Length: 535
Image 1 (tube, rainbow, N blue to C red):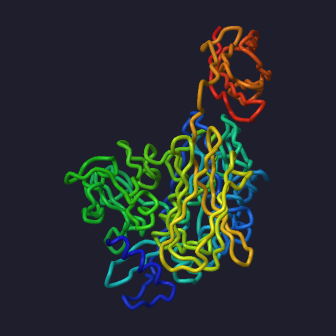
Image 2 (image 1 turned 60 degrees about the vertical axis):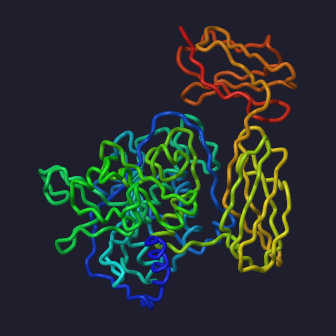
Image 3 (image 1 turned 90 degrees about the vertical axis):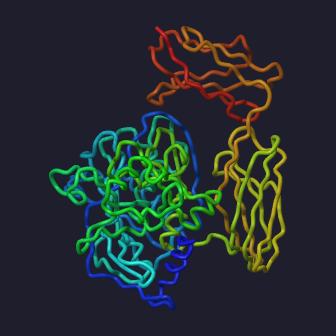
């Protein structure tokens, strides 16, 4: 209940003075170089989550986020910058445009970005707001730290002067970046647009600002070994960030009910139990609405990691979300996802991509078909919806039309069934048509349909000199099979027509190889497996 009320207050701040109180910006600000890091998870787990908006909507985005690519020789966070590759700049602006299409502000948002080989080898990037400013909204709550870009949007004023709103550093020492923006990231490459989109999320406010004191050296909290703290110190008090005001424990109590600093906070940051409650969760109203009505679990590993703990979604609970703590090879996540709802909850005013208020939108597999359902809370000039499907998230076809209500200020429920989805991953979106002919698009839902009947078997594994295939008895047409080494190089390509056909492995070095095969008749992926070549 408190979380919903907080969100309502935030939305009323554009005028500074409300019926419930006045927003007061303190003169103090913090520039603690609080950065969040994104390390590599060194396994291949191919995934593509397409952007929530069409290219046209990104170009017409009401907000503007510009990237200032720092020249060679400048420093940021103590790292020396190198010359930015042109392809990396293109991918970075692609990511910035996605956030710009999702968030509304009349103020310019500038991100200083450094391309540096000084980062640790496994760190893909790190970022954070350039400044936090303290504000309060009495009598409801006291001093709270805001990332500068958010506070500028709320008060519609430039607080930060000529300084940037965010800062980010990216690893120039890696040779395995993929700079494309099409989601076709090779299984042994790192998608740069995803990394930039992730780090920009931190710069815009998805971070918690936590520490655990080690009792020696520079004071992290209060100098007491084992005490955890959240927020920043001001006039002798540790005041929270706006992100933290939405966090609760597993049993529903507020994290700010704990003393700050305290041993209890340190226990919670390391996934422990305090007062019978385990885990930390973001409990914003919109976050919960997009998470099945439940608070969203935050990342609190048993080993505390400054810049990672508490500032990401839990890896196991949200493995396909942008703001998880690790990114794997082959993963292209170009959708802010649940993090967008979290930013709305802390006060960012969202750009609604449809002229209707879409309060629910889901797709799920049912007996080999896909059931699509959505609900509008209000409609204006709504002719109706084309339900569209894609195999790759880029090329769309219409599978059905549903007429809209036209004008409505109450819930309207819609549904459609796709009787013949593709085997494998299906992407769905709503194309909403206005009565004046304008078209707008919803976010994208994905549904995986298991392949029916027997599959193509690849054997033996490990393999010696010949790789064999066992095709289903009724299989029609050949299979275009490609063999790749772990550097992404194609080392063999062959059409498999029958069980007698093989791929000869003799002469290839020992190691692992990716075998990928598509049906010549349907284009469907029927083989995707890694085999080991034995000596």
